[in-house]
Length: 115
Length: 109
Image 1: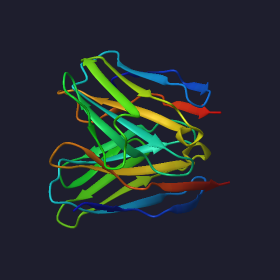
Image 2 (image 1 turned 30 degrees about the vertical axis):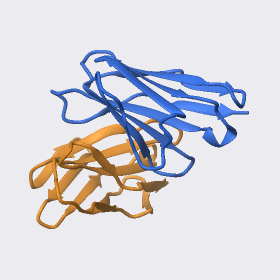
Image 3 (image 1 turned 135 degrees about the horizontal axis):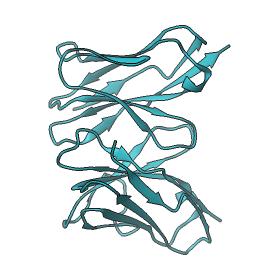
């Protein structure tokens, strides 16, 4: 299957700082990327959907100014958590889908801890 | 609207067979997916059904009935490593995935 690489795997940051998470499709062109957040023992929650070259579509309740998503190329999307707070601590997962792919392929996930 | 239901938790014995059901309601349908997710890890793809019937892949099989809004994931010859959450997700008319809450499968020796 296709490979999606997410970086970093885990990050600890101080409250008030910003953190950038990268999601790369390594062997296919990801026309659509999805960003999810998952709290312990809960299901995936879609935060936003981004199509290459256009602005991301955010789900209701997700602050677009706090969670900045950039999908500038067909192989890279980034999620920046700005002014992070402890309640932003979560598992963030990206998935990518190309035109030729039926399913979306997931990155490894990023464990964010804000202290 | 869209709605997906699957059991919260199931328990099975090593070596046995278990069936995890998923029912859904949707106005647009472009397929149903099953993913496996171990604790602390991202989901991994198991199966995709877009037509009615059974898709078999090794120890795992997935079934779909579009008229009934029903799917199941069948796991045979259960192994301890199969202990995980199993997520049912449907792809809607906009090709977005709508996720179920997941079924936590506990395998006992």
